[in-house]
Length: 493
Image (tube, rainbow, N blue to C red; front, top):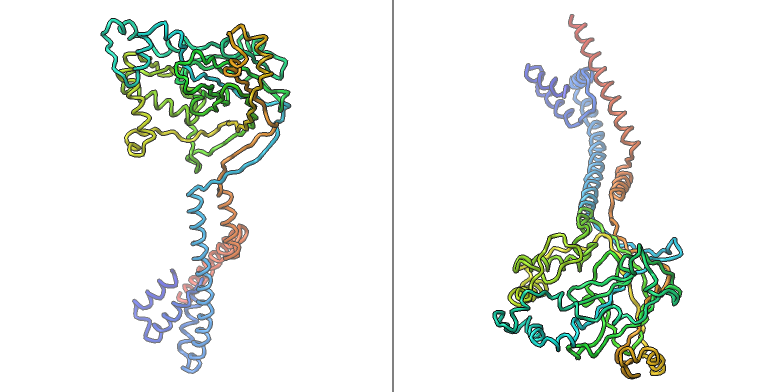
């Protein structure tokens, strides 16, 4: 800048002629790093020499300029290509790509936490109870699509009942679970935790359900040594509808509330089902990290967050918005819901429930009602491997000798009502499915360093050295210019 200002000042004061101006342009394209006042005077003295010698000097300087600009061109191309690659890497980093990493490890302990086994009978209410109350039976049959005159004296006494009141007249634990043991030595009635039984029961969309190991404190080993054995009675004679007779069974983590009709397996009487379980742990990244989960989703009214519990909460909010009540209370009543009466169920509850199902499943109504349910960040699922064996008449005959009189069953009646379920861990290994960043900050840093070193020959030490040399050069130039100005001032004086 100082060199340029001196040239401009010289031209402004009329000190430069045509030859001086030519030298000015020639020196301008030389672009010296440090051009002192002495160098300026040397260039002027060379321009005063004979034309032949000046021409030789000009060609020499031209050759140097060609090499200099060639060097600058190659260096500039390398810099531009490096900048392009750096922008690509930065763009990739900002996209936050992810990849899935699968690993298998063995439990550090000699046992695994046994899952919760939820069992629901498809029959939600006993036939004998309905036969004893024909008016209530007609209400049950017409709740969904039929017409009910709630001012009729036959139905008016029942309009303030709830669906749960029906479910209370369904098979109990003693009527359903005929035998329950773990590892063949401990009976479920003898297993207690904090003076509480090992099983619980609740009422929901699938009626009365029983949950074994609901608190998740039972531990188990792999194989038959830790299996849970259940002998169930479907009680066919109490079914209102004989078209489908089976249990639905869900095997899930104890922190989750599973609706077995949607997520469980179906087991029918007359068979033994042996279910091998293998644990899988899933870990998803948050949306801010490139994943699909939302870490702000914690426990909801159905326990630990998962996709199914999220949809059930959406259903409850939809029903409460439409009818100011819900069909069933969730296990954790966080919103102080009101349970619909039978009249509300008939007039609003069931129609709104059907509309909700259509809204979330029919693509034509996709935008009419949106339920935002991201995948859970942490989730434990159980992969099942089921084998089925038919129960033999010899086995049924032995059971008939001890239990035939209790339910008034024949040998064939036992085969028509009994089902055996055995759940066990297939091994002690756990599958870990983890979502991790595919291009992290350290990958970006490594790529930046690699490209700068490959294309520019630069590294951290190179940059430090360049800064040091530049600082030294600037310091020497400023010192040289100061000395030149001082000498000229003394000469003038």
